[in-house]
Each structure stands twice: as C-alpha cells, then as structure tokens.
Amino acid sequence: MKLLFNTRMLFLRGIFFTAALAAVVVGCSDDDDNTPAEPDDLVVLGSTAERGSFLTDADGNTLYYFATDVAGANTCTGGCAANWPVFHAADLTEDLVGEGLDFDDFGTITANGASQTTYKGWPLYYYAPGGVREAAGQTTGENVGGVWFVAKPDYTIQLGRVQLIGADNKHYTGDYTEGDGPVTYFTDAQGRTLYTFEFDKKNKNNYTSETDQAKNAIWPIFEATPDQVPSALDKTLFGSIDVFGKKQLTYKGWPVYYFGSDTQRGQTKGVSVPQPGIWPVVVKDAEAAVD
Image (cartoon, rainbow, N blue to C red):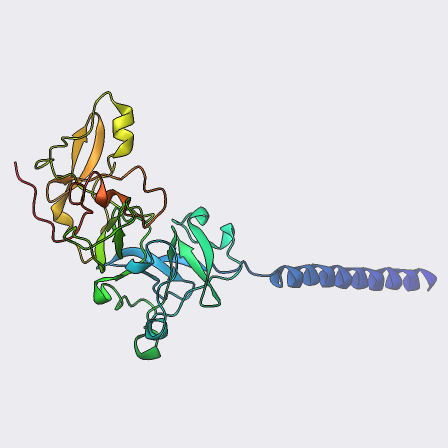
C-alpha cells in the first residue's frame, strides 16, 4: 500500500514539474513577442517611373527643395509657407535613415521659429496646395513655378535662384548690367554656383592649364558626368569632355566651372571677375557654344 502511495506521489510530482516547465517556456515566448519593434526609418527613398528615386517621409510623402533656398536658409514665408509646410524629422539618427541615404547629408535649421530638416544643405518641404497636403506617392509639386523640385539623392545639377552679387559687392541682373532682380542658375548638389567662360568654344576648354595648378584653382573645372537633373532641364543638352584626364561637365557645349573664391553655397562672386560677363553663371536659356 505504501509503495503504491509513493508511486502515485512521484507520478503527480512529474505532472507538476512538466506543467511548470511548460509555463516557463510559454512565458519566455510571450516575453520574446513583447520585444519592442525596430522603429521605422524617418526618411526613405521612394520612386516612380517618371521621377526615379526621391526622398520621402516614413509614410511615403514626397519631400521637395526650393531654388531660392540655395544659400541654405528657408526663404519660403507668408503665403508660400501655407502651401509648402516644412519637414522635420525629429530625433533623426543614423539608424533612422533609409537605405541609399547617408546620415551625414542631413542637418537641422530653425525656420520661422520651427525646426526644419535639411538635405545636402537644402531645407526640405512638403507640398500642400491650398493647405491640403498631396497624397503619399504623388509628386505634383515638381517644377511648380520653375523653382520647386523633388529632393533626389543623385542630382548632378540643381537650380538656385538669387540676386547675383559679384566680388565687387555690386548687384547684377541676368545680362550682367548693374541692377536688382533674382536669376535662376545652375548649382551643384551642395548649392555651389556653376559658371561658363566666354572664351571657350564648343566642347573645348580654353582656360585650364595642364601644369599651372594655381591658375586652375581660381576657376576649377566641375568634374562630373550627366546624371540626374531637375525636370525643368533637358538632360540631352548635357555632356562631358576630357580635360587632362578629368571629366568636365558641359551644357550646350559650354565647359562648366566653379569659382574658387565662392567659399559658401549661394555665392556668385565670379560674375564680376575680371569684369561682368566674362564668367557668366550657367542658365537654362544660354546660347549654345560654337566651334
């Protein structure tokens, strides 16, 4: 009888131990399921067949840049701000930037008392015509007014629009006479102004020296090949030439340069050197270079 009792107790203890072990396993499984999910990226790349790749927020809303912001400050105020709300990715960190984007390209500025995210120095915006934001995946803000464009990760050329101010601190119009009025011109992806040289010929650089690096530093060539350009521009008008082993971008046959004394984005000091019109900024409607 005693043996039967002991056997029964061992059996019951086995059942209890098995049940307890199962509870522990289930409990561990529940803990695993409750592990916080990885946060979504705050800025990602979207794409369409028409636009290619461009920046969006986490919900797929397209982000834009404004040509008049070329110096890196928000210039969209008043009624403009109602149609183009600022984008701000709060607490953006490297692990919250989507694939294909570099965290180092992002920054933050304060605009009209609010924080705004920048990309390669360009402040970023949404498009909300009439105060109603466009739907996710749409790019209806592209080329609005010839100054608003989707923010792309791989632009070769972007457009800036400012008052031209020469190294002599004088204001110039688009025909290089003294006067006021903004001009829309080409920049690189970081907002640095691009120029052509009056004495170049079609696809022929007549300035750069093979040996005089001091001279070359005054007007460095823009080393690039055609890639992505704003939709306002005709990509087929761009090309490249070989200049002493380097690829220099051309537009309508004109070789394209920087001015070495433009140390900040948005500066246009070269327009007055050595006199107005010798080194014009690159503009969409420039006359084609000739042989």
